[in-house]
Amino acid sequence: QVQLVESGGGLVQAGGSLRLSCAASGSIFSINAMGWYRQVPGKQRELVARITTGGNTMYADSVKGRFTISRDNAKNVVFLQMNSLKPEDTAVYYCNAGVNGRYVYWGQGTQVTVSS
Image (cartoon, rainbow, N blue to C red; front, side):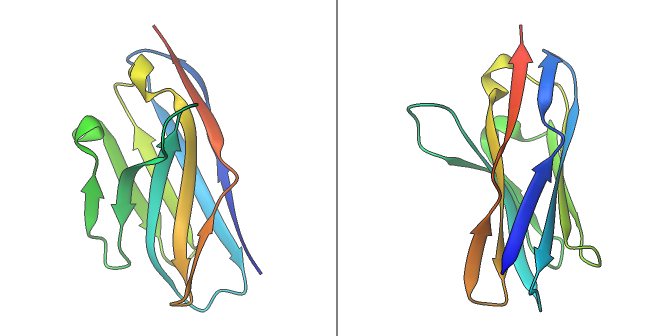
């Protein structure tokens, strides 16, 4: 079994920063791409950022220049540094990972709230 556990969410004022972490544990032989998604009530979950094992990254247009995704392959951890936060960034943030070449796992989500 594989688990993804997110941490680092919270309440921050507009313009502030937060750093999310997601640690994968369990029966892991390899992890492929890892990503961060977010969801607000009544809307579909959307991709925020994604990073491959080799470090190639992609970002949603809405977060380019403000968010940075990174990972520690040795520790099976992915990070999301979020700067210049806006109220519209408020959402539940989920991490996911492609594990052992076969399955995609999701974390339980962490709430990020940006006040204006």
